[in-house]
Length: 236
Picture (cartoon, rainbow, N blue to C red):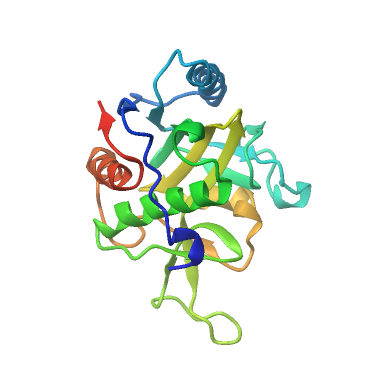
């Protein structure tokens, strides 16, 4: 693996309480999610709330990160578009995609943004490994990728690759919010309204697209187990 995964455990200081693990029912409106995250991040910083991983699904929408380019919004009328303070470019959220908002206090862990992104990538790779999918990272692209030998190679002969998981975080006073999104069974055509994360050369995939019919609750259990290996114990 690349160097940013070399030391990817991100445990809290000894004596810290377990991270809350909360799964939201149904579809969560994006505005509600942002408001909830901001309030909780402030409470975590103040020592008034525990760290939390909040798992949601959203109705179909696009979000624009701080590096989003207007030209990458291919179809602005397809779904609502939300400007957001997370890092990254345009991404899609919708039913069948598991979004995990990660609100951790890096002062209790490690005040290293690059290492934190590596820990998130390691978490995702560990969860995918539990369903026999080899997730990989790339130096020039954030997120998790899968090689597609079943697709035609790229110009020049390189193997085709598809993105299966995206990462976009924000830190405020060393408390993280926003997080990760992994494709279980979303409608992949909905990604066509944007250039996902600004990457034009590669596609997007999901577990179902890879021939792995798995339910969201089943994959949530893999996410939880892999999270504990990287970040420590959870409760809930």
